[in-house]
Length: 272
Image 1: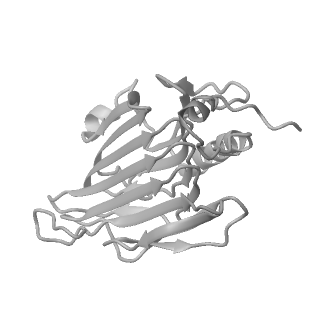
Image 2 (image 1 turned 90 degrees about the horizontal axis):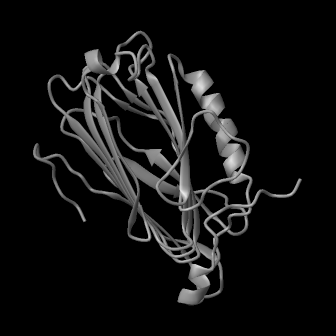
């Protein structure tokens, strides 16, 4: 479907759908380019579909809306890769939007390793992420938000995240970073301008305790890191990502309600 935002700009969504077919193969059922991103298939290891989200135009600019819709079918396994980051440039008094809608069916799995999202000075962005995870499903998401390019204070962003697991609220967050004066106060961000996180939805990952780990309202956890520069945050997130992906959490194809309910929401670590 193609729509327009209030300024008349095209807002065609990027569509990605992974399924497990009748023969048990992992298949990309839909890879439809949108106004900003084109999904491209990558060489995939057995039992998983790997897709790159490739930028097709500069953005975000004032009036832009980037719309992304991701569907993971029952028993399907999808890995999303972002080869390059995204920059929201000076909007000169305007605003832009970034929206992602994720649906993970019974026993499905999504690994999404996001690239940096930079909010340049003068930008004003609303970012909305909505996730629905069914029984036995899992999403592991790495996210990096950077306020400003080198030497900049950074623009305004409001990042809203709402994740549900089996129709129950799992994570609801409203990260309001619109006012630089307020976000730079002690106890908010202070001098930090890089905000990174690794979030597990649908499964409570094992591993050693992390000082920044937060348990979610249901099966899931999040580690969030702050710093003045990007490299330390990227290194810290990479370590958490490696730890949380090195688990025996492979979703199983559903074979009825009873089988789905028997899937554990905890991940035992792989034996060394």
